[in-house]
Length: 393
Image 1 (cartoon, rainbow, N blue to C red):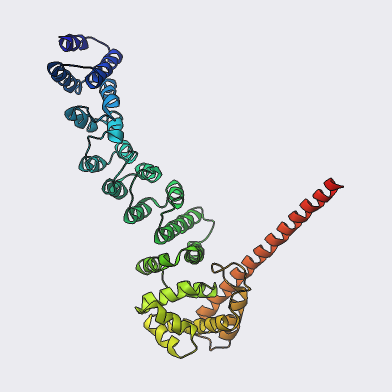
Image 2: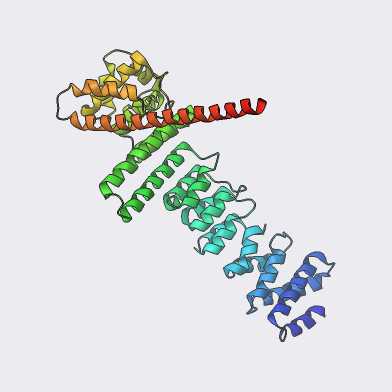
């Protein structure tokens, strides 16, 4: 009887009043002690309300039923397929929606619908993968910020491929503790490409020069990333570099001249398809096996002298006294390699000399920055110490 009167009243009531009454009916269905007949009548009335022309009425249903597992499934599934502003609460919280239902909702391509799914308190990796594959940038950002979402490395890579050029996406990814080293390197590449495109579009630099500077900055960051990564993450990073065409002689020479012998050995082992222990023995030994290893790795013959001289300098002098750890070029070693290579025949070696000179200039700048930073730090400490003595007096 009450439901019949409610339906009659709905025909003339304004939209706001209909929304309030609909919310009350939905709450009564969930929390009141209704008879079976009254519950059936209430469900029928709410199914009819799904066709109400006002989104306020349908939204009222969605907000009441969104997080409740006792909501009528027919109503919930219909609300989930409604327009995004009505469906959002159900998509974000309803326990009645299966993973397949959520994937289907993500596939619609509507940004608000995808973002609502991405903010669910618990999101399985299958739904996360769907968002990473077809979701808009907003939905992917919501997904990355959702600590209850399971995201596998492949999905992180897809987000980088599709939206890594956006600063908000990059920042959210880099804040993750579980971000694999290959994915971090892919973000570095995206950032360098974005910066190169920006300065080229503004005509601040010629395109060729901008690309070269971006490439060198990317290689520098890659070596630093390898130096900071745990040993178990270096080989996956090397494989990623090889698959993406970045594992070249220039990068390997930079790694070696930075003192990152571990990265250099991992790269040779990957390129030559040899055990790491055997490669390490050849690199640290003084026999003639390095030339065979180098050739098997498929590296160009023109850069072999530079690698030989760098290894010889490493064996004789080491990198203990050099600043910057295994992530910065070592000026003393580079100058020694450059001096010995300059005595070779000009021709194929000339591009290597040009590269070594750029490395030497970069190392000199880095060394100067470190020196100036130390001076400023010492000077600041001196002022603090003087102030303390004055206060004590």
